Length: 371
Ligand code: UD1
Ligand code: UDP
Image (cartoon, rainbow, N blue to C red):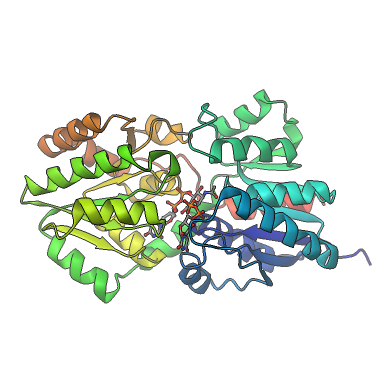
């Protein structure tokens, strides 16, 4: 009887577990064996998601340190994976996206001559320093990977243009839509979030997230000031900001929004609460990657707090608008949407360009075909 193939699935951050949980579920339903490895690049952010998705890591690299450096993450993941690969002998290592955990997982696989599968392949901003270091991480992972799971046709074309062989690319949609489809129908806010949403019910709720390294410092502070002024001068607007645990974010949020009326600073929300908050939002303002892919499914207009985006499909579909690096533009966009809500209204019925909720099934089917 042929040996059952084993897939090592590696993640370490919040977006990775959100996007790999449905793949793990499909693998468990299949004939593949699995080894689930968490780098714990995010320790606190990850925990509630492991619980809600029912994912139990076989190995926990437990590497998170306060103010960790990119090199600390990469070197610890590579060092620890060496031993795990030796004992578990996986046939494929599956990594997701563009984090330091994913980059290090791909390098570790390559060095041990284990084929690497890349979920969410082919995203490119075109600027090697933005998002930093994610754009370079993705490019390197594409060079290493043997199997490329592209969310969209545009992603596939980027890979082909870089010389990746056609038969190694599978267009699957983004697995974030699988997760959202599974969980969004049933969300019910927790008591704490419910209280905030209750107070926001008759108001325009802006949902804000911001955590990108390239905007730390002046740009992030200026953007937060613009939002603070916008809320202060409009009594029917409130703002909810789940603050990322990176100390750079907390210190900016604490100093600019301190004790301001109608601004709610909360700890990062679990998935259930975050989706409930998105559903309740009048407008989402964010520099997140995943939120650009989720907003279309929830019919929410999104202002992208970045210089560029590798998720152009959201802009082309009309769900998102790019703010760029100039806080004055954010001010203008907030004001124009407050005065004329036609764009926000129009977004409600737009189809999600990032997939139909079957990406994980397609990924596992492809692996079955090639292994
Ligand atoms: C990482 C990813 C980024 C992704 C983001 C999602 C890289 C290079 N970047 O960035 O692509 O968008 O995750 O959130 O991999 N911290 C905690 N507890 C946690 C998580 C983080 O205290 O559970 C604090 C620590 O002080 C840590 C800092 O946040 O040093 C930054 O975390 P890190 O994983 O290094 O980078 P992110 O900015 O979260
Ligand atoms: N998210 C969450 N709680 C929060 C903020 C975000 O559950 O308080 C989810 C969100 O729904 C999305 C993902 O986290 O699926 C995005 O992660 P993040 O913004 O940290 O990373 P990125 O997508 O930018 O890499």
